[in-house]
Image (cartoon, rainbow, N blue to C red; front, side, top):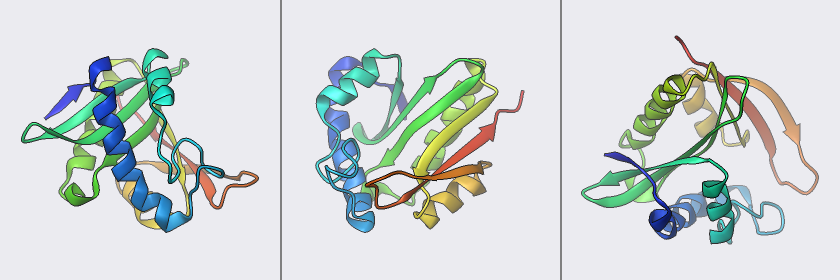
Length: 161
């Protein structure tokens, strides 16, 4: 079940962030220094709260009343919806929950009048990049940031009306 995250849920969302990003941080060498918001130390509560208060729509995926997934998206104007995160904690991955969150994101973006969903991701994560491609996203550009141990791939999905 996918539910809107309320402010009181944010502390539980941090657990999903920390568990979900830890495997990625290990695999791609993310540290607090080279990836302060999504690195090994995890997202600080204050940053998540700021995103929440700055109109990022946050949704949780609940399995047997346990929060096992998270999705954040934000309408940015000009018909663009930015997908910030889709996270499933490791023991629940590869069960289709992430895909359900992505389908939900596409539906919600359409409801909100978006004509495009954009995202940035670790392009070196070939498995994740292929997953997004298999779900209709296309690569638009790549960027290497100073100090980052990875290349960022920017992708977009055209919302069908």
